[in-house]
Image (cartoon, rainbow over all chains, first blue to last red; front, side, top):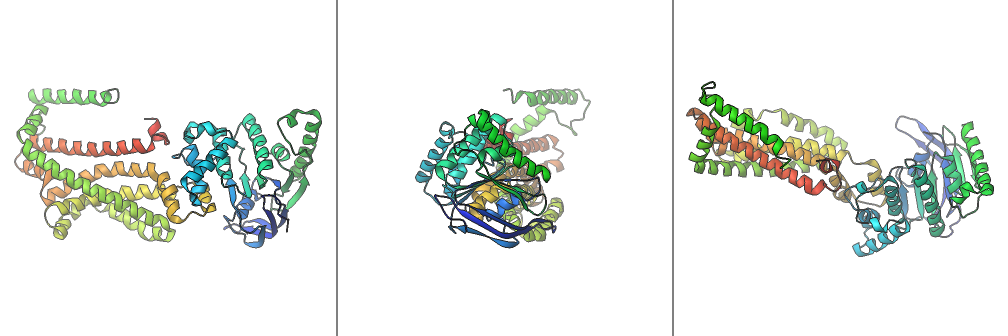
Length: 254
Length: 250
């Protein structure tokens, strides 16, 4: 079992299997260790079981075989979806405070925490606005704030920036990386984007097209501090390009 | 004014045209009364019509309120399980297809002459759109948001109140708009048999060949329907204006 460090959760997947109702085997016998506080990117072609894997780890959908162990056993998980999925009838502040409300935190306390996390994602000025009054990037930042407000030990992200324009995506990637370094939770980040995986994660796994077999498991050899300069710095950019090339190679083999 | 002018112009044109055609003898007044005759009937029978209007309004409102609360409760129940939905929803559809005019005499047998029969008629006619629209709304909740609520341990009750019901509100209000008009129709049909209100005025005036009075009563019934419709529109504007496209593009 991977050890617990900082605020993160260590996970061990043992011979995990998931079969859909139409007898389609999505994941077959997957073994994977995820260290506490790790930033893991999961790549793979469409339909390879990336989202199914996240749902099983979130305990939203139980595995049909094998087991998923966690250390510690009881912890708060948050989920960020591909779209922001905010409640349109609630303000930014009320959307951010929603998880605390569901967990039974008192109103004053949850608003204090929600305002603090909105400040972290740079949205303190927008707390009274409704989702319809926000841009796509702002909505995604609210979604991120909502996920972080409970101070989760495990953050699951399912292609959260896929629908955003490139500049917004780059800025959010930097912001997410900073938040992860500051808060120390375990992050599992599903993406189709090789550059995103290489830039954000400190480890990436590539899943095979069928059965969720891991065809590449690689530590990303980049410095911990990652800003947009890394993309343009000749030396670091070369290393980023090298990581991308390796991931791309594994994806192309699939 | 911009909102009211477009429908007002055709109304004034048609009213003037009918007045001119009836006065000129092109349309016999025993078939279609002149609008001025309808206004005169409204004035001459104002006490009788006002009392009838009050009774019909009360019956339609009570019937509508009952169908709103009962319809929503049934929809919540139907949405709680696929098995319950499969077992009972066909009966709700069947209930809708039964012609109210055919079962109105039965209502008199069950509830007697008067208010109860009229309310029952308004209720039966208006409940189905509430059930159907509320059910559609409750079943259309975003699966990702349902997952989010599950992730934070929300109970079924909390999920209903804080997610499913507010998300279904636009569809529920659409159902209420349809139901409000049907409640007035149901009340009038009930009054034909149950013997009171505007329905009774129409029935009696018909036997007396008082077409002007029939039109006066029908006009009041329409105004009642419009009033209820406007009330639902007001509730819709107040609750949805900040977040739903339907109210932001009006």
